[in-house]
Length: 348
Image 1 (cartoon, helix red, strand yellow):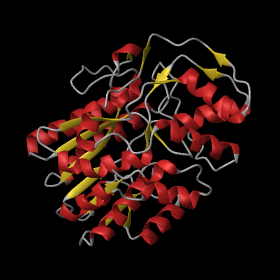
Image 2 (cartoon, rainbow, N blue to C red; image 1 turned 30 degrees about the horizontal axis):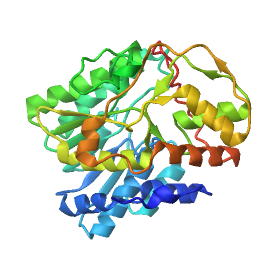
Image 3 (tube, rainbow, N blue to C red; image 1 turned 135 degrees about the vertical axis):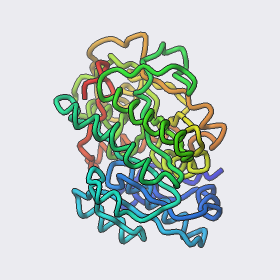
């Protein structure tokens, strides 16, 4: 096991952060060496896409594999496109809701689907359903001869008792709110085409990826540092370091099957929001206040099966907490995209 990053005390710059998040594990390199065909990431310009693509490019390079890595996005931020092209990816600017743009994409044996809409969905429900549930069918039809890994979310489960350890892949779904319902729609559409067309597919229920510029831990740390009260309604969470999530996402191409495979992806710990906030308060030497009381249920995933297949995440939660605290205290850049993890009514 590669524990190189476990010794990190702080990450001083965004450049170093990008390097850490995209550094492939030996298992990534070996997988790249054995992988047949090229890789295409759809939705490459989002929060997780850029470091995932860089990791795949680096793994391919270290494996000396003849693999092209395509990065497809609308690229509302052209700097991201330039950055990915410089890393060695072949960037393609495309609006996937445009049929001509979708059809013009090159054939590709391996597709990682990261397109989705969450924030701003309240008031834009039709657009949310179109992006989260309609578009997957178009993509599944376009790439019916490919292997597909599609990012989903733990929001397709209902909140469960905290002492349950979290929902497992065989538990019934119960999405709360239209965002979560549309995400279940995405899964059902991919499942339909996986069965009808025999397209090998894997659905990854992620809950939640974290790094230093966004995520549940950043949200909590920024509240504590600013002296804002911490909401406790969603009193417990799961998190996974984005570098570990990137590795699982890439190697999950090997799990794609028909009928579609489903896999929870998160860390091994059920973390108390109160204790996390108190830990950040200790790190910052500040007082912390709370509002509300923890409910008896929370949105939690049991990712035991993922850990059996890919091993537990290399980066433990305690180390991520230290890195986040150092980053926030220094005024490190954030993406300005709060997770709203505490929302219980499903309205984002």
